[in-house]
Image (cartoon, rainbow, N blue to C red; front, side, top):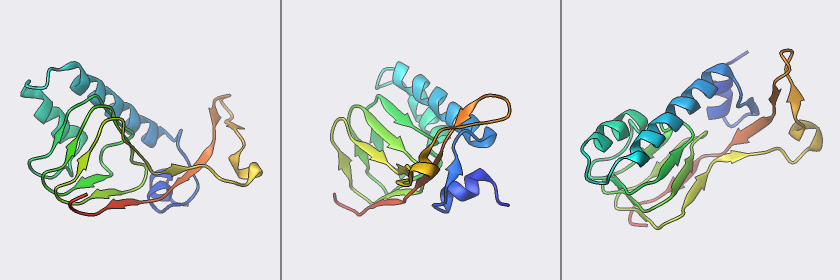
Length: 145
């Protein structure tokens, strides 16, 4: 059986509370908090973005605050700009072309929850923690949008 991350990226039902996914999401959350706490001109922001968004194109700028589920599944061309409150739920690959600008309060949401009631139900693990299944669909935005 393949791991939950592989299922997630393949668009299959997966458990988002999986240990590996939860740790990656927590790391992204913490990096977003650090980025958001700094002034726009602080050079430290660039190094945080490089760690959070390894596939960010050159000359890209995110005003902040920003929020990413993972960061590593977000791919952009050059000259991408995102205004305030940019939310990216990148549990599937999200690809953005060159010269794309996002206004304030934009959310790119790849996750989906099953329509079937049985598949959508909250479950309980042997340790008593709760989880549910979701799946994700890729998002592609071309250049000059």
